[in-house]
Picture: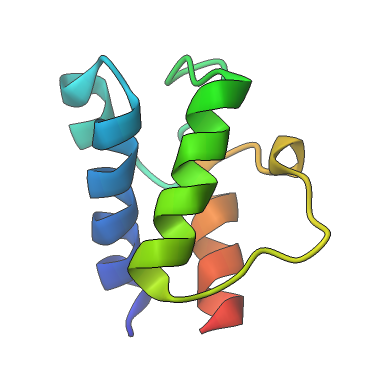
Length: 81
């Protein structure tokens, strides 16, 4: 799967976890998850579960706080596929 496809699927997941669909639609890989998208730890937990189901991957011993930007998450998913 190409990076752009991962990014688009991730944006769909983020929209489901967020109240601000427009902000996510306009996001780039450099967009910061917590400070720019306002994602809480609960939002991040939901996102991790949705990513695991969507991409059929499992997160290792990585903490969700290690993801700063949307691109960090895309890179992690890309590495697991």
